[in-house]
Length: 231
Image 1: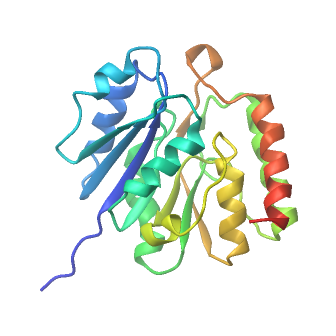
Image 2: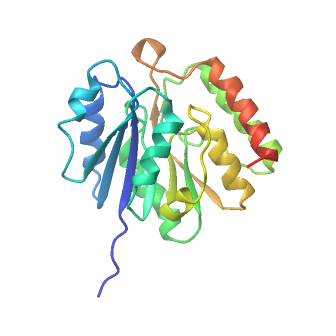
């Protein structure tokens, strides 16, 4: 009997993504692997919630927040409901390409990693990242490497792939974009192996709906320092 293929849970936090929702679902569902898709609406106000109400079923779970809490809170909700062997974060915009899932899973399948990060900075297909955004990401990654004595290239990447038991065993306190430094800090403090895989990336501008700002950068900095000394 051949071994069972792993099941992937794709957790998609959603906030005002009416224009990209169907396209990202199409791309995720096109990946040739057994999967479940968990969409968590963080109290959208642009009609996204109405679209989501018709998407439950066929391997999709749809969950709703009564009030806007942030990306970290949406991910926390999604992780709690995950049933797959592996769990990956997928933003609802079109910056990250689900076609990268299969190569991201490879280090876990081969036993070379405990967690896999998709790196935008070790790839040649990273496009349209604003210069200030790039500098902010590189600075926060450098700080992560200094504080936690590691050597990763893209701490803030959306594409973080976990074993389900790993992500469900970590208590996530951050409600907003500071999920990224918090989860990285807690992974590294546990001594878990992070392997990075190059991914493609096509950034969008603030006029196109990008939500992270310079204020989130300061929050990420504080989060890195805070979780170095607390749980």
